[in-house]
Length: 154
Image 1 (cartoon, helix red, strand yellow):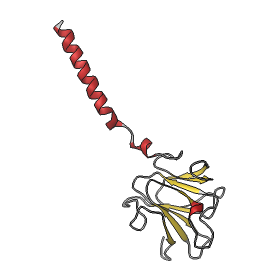
Image 2: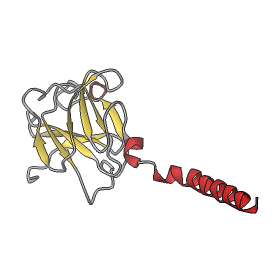
Image 3: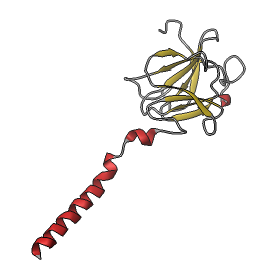
Image 4: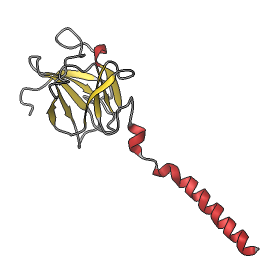
């Protein structure tokens, strides 16, 4: 009888320990995904991020031209990366213009005025995800920012 009580106590202690540890083993990747965009991606949408369709996604940290079938079609973007900011770039502007999306942020591009007098919707053809070392900020803030790409930028 004593053995059964010890075994039961051991099993209950192990079960309690396992229950305590379970939240610590949860994947941060699933927690960082949003609006159908999986971590660690930056997704672009046809329509708004809340009810549109993902038309492309990116996760490499280098300067990338968008494929021709989605170039200048993005209406929204979601950055699921935890510590990286991203520039969506319009190379048709003179000089090139960018809108910076900070870490863990979703934006409807039509809500932001483009320097050409329209909005950023349907004006993005290139993307640059900033990897390490990056703090996920845009010009020192977690707010969406925009500007012009420096002439000597790679």
